[in-house]
Length: 417
Image 1 (cartoon, rainbow, N blue to C red):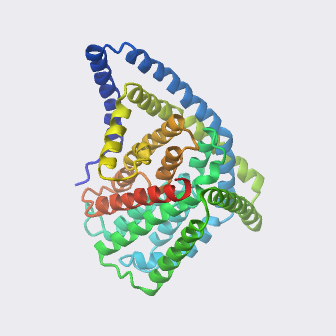
Image 2 (cartoon, helix red, strand yellow; image 1 turned 90 degrees about the vertical axis):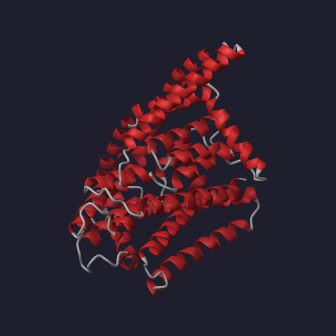
Image 3 (cartoon, rainbow, N blue to C red; image 1 turned 180 degrees about the vertical axis):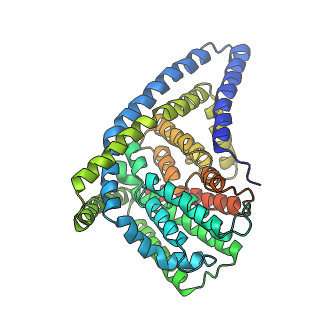
């Protein structure tokens, strides 16, 4: 049964931040005579609120820029082009959908929009796809195989352009905000690949099909070649090549979107302004969410609770003989399946605490970009059509998340360790 309510989970997590922090602070005061803990907690509420507002304000310009560029690409037909490219693969991954059914177009468009980071376009297309799949569903309260595959493709978080993460890194003072572009692309590929394989095994989809083998195998070979190539470089040169490649790709995408708009006879300037306006409203809209989560995390950290949690995990990892450098970024990874805004707050907190260019700061960004908010997507998409029996959707989604987390850690060590 699907009884998950993401808003309520985040609500209880937020409450837990304050209650746990208060209890720990009280114990420190009563038993250890720590008179500084409560002033530190109150100071953190003010400083965290100020930080949240300053970050949101600083995001406005860059968000306006990128959402403007994305609007040009959207109107220039880039989403349609990606949908056509993905068509041969997806027809094999959704064998239960009749050929020529309108839902196929909605699925393609949703995945293509997600890959480009067009959340505003992706969500309505996703809801429409779910409604169309529900029309084909003989058991209206039970998720079908195509629904689950579609949800896993969404929750695995395949994104070609992690705009928001690069924007946050720029705002937090990263020397090269784009240096996580290639690592995120690699990590999210492994997450998506794991999700497709695991779901296909559950649904008995033939992965040895020629189209699937050529597409996934070809993509895996490209990724393997990228990893091998970067593995031949020392860490300094690897960082330079990765950053240069990311910047060249991003500039190429901007030019390609503009050319696509010109080809479609779109007024690219007006399209840019339309998208830029969305960037401004987006930046304003996230202020209360960022204030709420950063204040909660700030109080939790000021009380010493965050250090206790991280130290406990670090001790366990080291006791097992592992390298514990990644532990400080784990809160972002653990929060991501539950809440996008919560994980965003954890990522910002990691960059604030350890530095945007620290290993932990970069890894938290890779965690943020390697998967999506699994439970939130399941609740919204299944809830929109009244699905209560999710079958293997949660298992497949979480296993894809786990693959993304493991890949993110390995790739972060490779690029920044």
